[in-house]
Structures are given as C-alpha cells and as structure tokens.
Image (cartoon, rainbow, N blue to C red; front, side):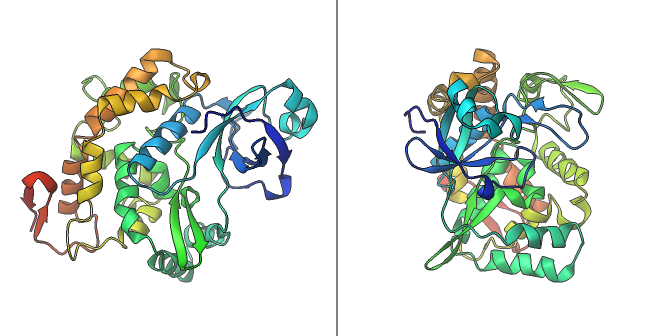
Length: 349
C-alpha cells in the first residue's frame, strides 16, 4: 500500500458501482488516480440502521497483501482520508453515501473492465436461465490467465472466503489486447464475516477471536475448521445458505472456476500450496503491522488471532485439497497419483 496520505479530489457519481451492500463510490484521489472507495458502515435491506463492519477494512488489506504474495491478480489498494473539509466540499459523501470522518479502504480502478457479467449472473442464478449459465461458462472458458484459478481457490480456502463461491461480484474480467483476464477482488467477507466485535449468528453469540482459534474445542466444529471434512462441511453449509449447494457444490462461481482447472500434466495446486506453506510468521506480522491502526478495531488481540489462525490454516490447505479430490469436487480430475513438492505423493485413485 502506498504510504502517501490521500484525500478526495473528485467524486464520479455516475460511475459509482451499484453492486454490493457497501455501495462503493468511484473517486479521484489527490494523487490523480481513480479508486473504488468502500464504506464499512453498511445497511442491509432487512435492517433499520447501518452496521459497523469493523473488521472489513482490516481483512481487505490483509488478504490483498496475501493475494499479491501468491501472485493472484488483484487491484492495488490505498487508504483515503475523509476529514471535515472533505465532507464540507462533497456533502453527498455524508448525506447520500453515509461516509463520516475517518480513513477508508479503496482499490485502484482498473481500466477495461467488462460490465456484462453481473447481468448474465443474475439471469443464471436468479432466473435459472440455462442459456445464461452456458454463457457464463463460455466467458470463463475463454479467459487468458486460467493458470491463476488454482491460486484464487486456494487463497479462498486459506482465508475462509465463502463469499466468492456464491457471488459473481467478487471476480472481474479485464479486457486486454489479447483477451479477457480474470481479476480477484473483495475480501471483506473473508474469515467467515466482516466483524471483530461479538455478533449474533443464528441466535448464538459468535466471537471472531473464538472462530479463528481452531484449537479451541469449545467452538462449533462446523464453524471452527480443524479438519478437512469439517472445513468442507463449513463451505457446503455456506453454499446452502445461498441456495446453491445442491446444484453447484460450494457455489455457482466455485463450480464454474473449478471446471477450468486442468489435471492433465501436473498437480495444478502444487505451486500455490507450496507458496502458502512458506508464508512465515514474520511475513504475517509484517503484513498486519503495515495495516493502518484505524482498521484494527481489536488491537493486539486481533492481530495475534489472525496471525495464529493463518499460521495454522496454511498446514491444512494441502490435506483439504486432497480431501476435495476424494470427494469429487474437481470435475477434470480423472484419477491417478497426485504429486506434491518436497516428495509428498498421495494416490487417490
């Protein structure tokens, strides 16, 4: 992240994205670049007032850094400051978009992003149109950088990002001279939810610090992922809550992405799993230490919880991939031996 203090010079209201509950705003910052500015105060359709998603910006920054480390294509991000002068200059920020004084997460606006994907998605999912589902698969089948799909999926497994698997708004397609390229975005819903403070889930009090402590036997095993089977159950339950489990495994987006993974020549997850396993405690400490303090609502306890979780979780990705293979979650796997770096082999035939 650029360390320069950035402010808003212009709001592009006609370009502001309409997708997503956070209703982000397109702005030009004081460095002359355009960004997609997010708000952590979110009002959901069934709520009377906005809710402070107090871990959202922290998670966005943390997973963006991990994505970059894993060579997952993702936009650069910055922190943009909104002060009293900004609110006075742009009253719509306060009254229309519900921003207040603070430091906000923003991603650099990418050029040549296609705008037809969400309409196809809505036809495919909301209206269950078969031709739209075929159209969605065709778009994915024609992307240039299919080689990054295993890395995107492993990033989501590593950070418990169920939201990608059921939400087409969390991937973009960038049109370049040689074709369409997939880009990964939106990490606020990683680690199960965008909150650090205790919240109520299904009438039970859920603390993020407990959720991240995978060695805590008191945590519901369907939520706290200690073993591959439980981790799979967690993703399946998340998919079921969105009405997508029975048809599309972990979700429509997951199913579409996994269809483009080839097992013909080698284990497609080899390199990314190795890269995840080599993320050190120092790497995580440095990444988390670089996140603006305003986004760390839980102080040192929050930093330690995420560091501990990610250190433990990185050792579960390989067995989780193996377990997914045995459960037929990857369409193009036809049996045979799966080889891993450092001499580890399994035979799943």
